[in-house]
Length: 298
Image (cartoon, rainbow, N blue to C red; front, side):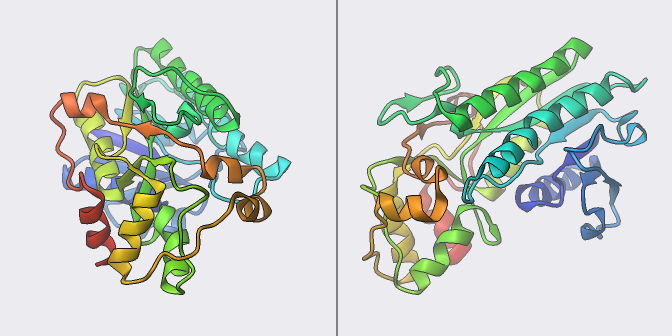
């Protein structure tokens, strides 16, 4: 299958590209900095998702489009940052669908990243793909994002929306920001630590995208490990793997000072489970947090 991927040089995108190459798919990458990918098996195309449509020649004749590009959410929110978070997801998806409408040989599959932020702050409620969206900026952004992705169905495409949790990896995602603090003996739980964290190993995320390419699935799929944990449990396990104590809880006022409005979402609770993947028999490489952390950090 011929696949074109936005964000293919990013933290998750690099793994997805490698996983698809393993299955001998043809892979092309859209990137604002295409020179970053020097793999000879990957065709690279320059595209800024906020400027306009991707180049039509890069899309024409593709079988599958995978859309991963998006502004990093984990930063201090300002009005401009929030605009970039929204537009890099919603407007970019709109630009891709607009380009699909113009090419003669249209793709058959559109696989769009989404996020567990769509569920909002839900306490101890178990959240599956059938759960209704929550409220707030992230939930509203994800809803609009997925709505744009669904427009691909107007062209007869199979549409898959993958709601990704807290991704764990060596060189990006949640761990990149957490590990340095723990190594300096100042790590700890966020707020009360009672909030649920739907984590997932980056290799499992790549497997989920490959599964969506290789199988005739559609609709919403949660890409989270089957065993979410509370933040306090996550903190304890991370500290144990690193051989450090977790002595310094981070109070909400300190989070607010560092991250502004985003601080509230850092203590939101979303007990998300991958019900559809589990029922489909998908095999997670890292279903338990301890195994995931020891693979990455042990």
